[in-house]
Length: 247
Length: 322
Image 1: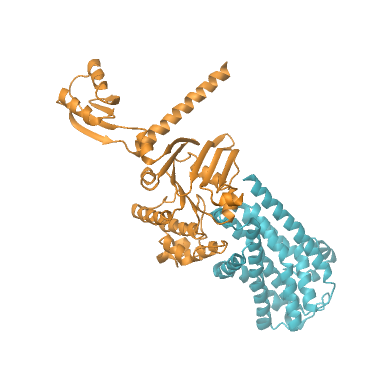
Image 2: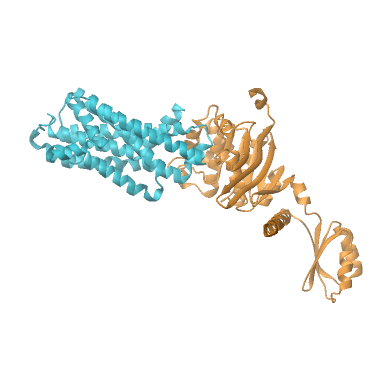
């Protein structure tokens, strides 16, 4: 596995400004709209004990980070259809190395998105939280994005270019809405929150909230997201081996 | 064992290689041994099995039967060691990157690559280094892909139709850079359907048709398969059986064909045949004498293998009938 390759791959994706504008712009616009709507007058959320503007910021940063990671799916599908993977197969880069480079690139773009959203919230919306709180929220969200990077790799492995787009839409809308990244679950009936716990995006949001409030049993979301990670990684490896064998 | 494989003069060894896609037998029993330093052309029409043979040799696809070895071992090991560079059909560079970024990205996975500047220079890509891949012309794109293929400083270079989409000048420049590369004793295998390329740049031609080898030898050997020259002329006299027999008996004649007022004689001794011809039939006119070229060899050989296939199939059918 080549560290230089992984670094260049991440740098390449971060330089791709045109592609990233869309990844970053939508959560940013939503943050500015919902942040002012929910956060007006310094209202507090009773469930998390955080100001509403912070709750919204974490939702949107989680959403932005998730989008950035899921966006890898498109990169993989496009690169596969172009023939770049075929070119890579005549190099010493292993299949594992390729997949790791995609996960790392997903995490690199994610952290950029998360940090950007939090900065905008602090500067533009005047969201207030301790530095430690912001740092822990960032770290929690970033770690929580890992399963989404694997979902992206899995979509990239499975989907043909023709249905990658609808598949991506279903996954990301489902994750964003069900997991409470768009509309806070606190304002929904209780049963919605119970159902939401089946999707990893709910726990992604919880990671951010617990980080920000520096309270709560952080072990719970960590273990659940870790299970998601293990299961998804299993699928990715299984699929990769099957592809290799079929050739 | 390892020591032996390090000094192995055999670079590519394909034994009894077969690959079927459903009913289609893309590669149908191929045996090839290529030694270190050879420049080999895989020549054949579209669908002859050139690309599939290359994929099999590189271990990119599993054979239905037979075995492919590179440098005496598994193709994957040779690739992992960076001993193989390849320009494949359907392999592409990412459009958003510049040529030098693409070369640098591929260089980063190799253990002992050339410097990016040197790879670009060898592939004549220095002046397009800063250009985006999406902005390249067909010929420039092929050069960029060549730079990517040579950046690992490979001992074996496999090029699948490298000059497709190139104009004449671009092809000339491309082969010039390829020759500099092979002059250093590297092994090169290239697939092409340009006969003149195989003739000019390879020291061995392996001709494929319908997944089988129909000829394997030096360019002159392959051309000699269809020996002789062709004499073509028009005549005004009436064609009789006697005259036809007489033409058939001219020195070295292997075939005589008539079409309207024209005949074509193929002879291994065209000079003597023509002298005698003019002596006996002084009024023939519009005389042309042409050498056989690769195209003729190609057509003859592929037609021969098709006939052989058909008779084999016919034999098989008769066998079934009984």
